[in-house]
Image 1 (tube, rainbow, N blue to C red):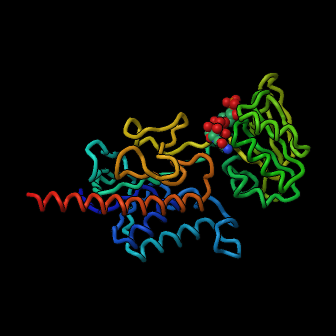
Image 2 (cartoon, rainbow, N blue to C red; image 1 turned 120 degrees about the vertical axis):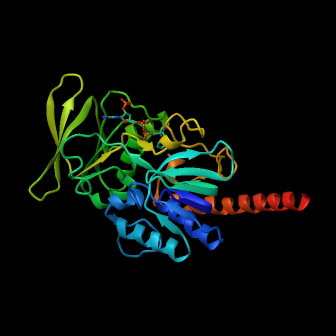
Image 3 (tube, protein in one colour; image 1 turned 180 degrees about the horizontal axis):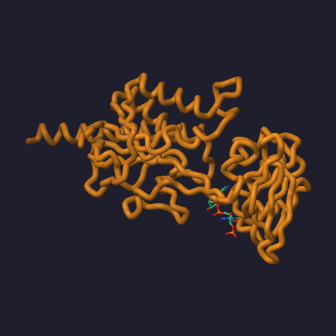
Length: 323
Ligand code: NDP
């Protein structure tokens, strides 16, 4: 077992974690990023990225994350290929974390950037057709279905927002929901029902995503949740919007979370209720969930971490001087 000590310990390696690392390293905090099971995060499982500012041409998600990692390393970040399995926040700074390698990490500040993952239906064809017609993010991929037939699966705020968003690109959007009433806020429902481009399909679940001869999604096999009857719906794109699961298992009982499991921060900041512990990116943001917003909150976490450390180090200095 090795102990790694740093002024800034970052858990998670998506745009939030890497941005925190870039800013933290440039501020002299010698960050350590513990990358987790999926280094690079959710963007490593997407293909084309067209909405990350700074790139006039389409770029690939895995490439973008590789660049962020290299940039963080160039300015002085240490990357650890390890997954944190335990954290100890009870005694304040410095914070201790343990990796599944058995290594121990000690950080004067802790930045949590563990992200979130889209929930999937877990039915045949879904995984295989990921990126070939099946997606979990209309804001990211909707553009690729301009003028095509699309469907959104789900009945919450995300599903309704995604269906509304897709009407910017498509005149034929079907919202498939397993019940006959939506869970989403009334204002969103009103907009949905007012749209001539969206057709709700009630009491249906997708039982299978079926590919066509071109290897891309061709149609959905649907099951009626009341009668059990099977039917099909031809679509070019299907967006699964049944919720996200933030990766907050590690912090259960240690940091407050909302009813969906997202870490709660002081509004407008990445500060948790423990001084020196910051949360950024999708783990604390169920609303925007974009790479660029995650990067933005990662930067905020580093700036606040720097201020926290300056105050902490000043207090330690004063305490030594007073002895
Ligand atoms: P929700 O949990 O609110 O909704 C998930 C939806 O997916 C529900 O309608 C649910 O059906 C359906 N669903 C779940 N599992 C399955 C399944 N296996 N098969 C078929 N359907 C399924 O998730 P959201 O992502 O919509 O929202 C998460 C949180 O984020 C909420 O608190 C929401 O209010 C918030 N949010 C806020 C926004 C805003 O304020 N602008 C935007 C987006 C999200 P059922 O209804 O039957 O349970």
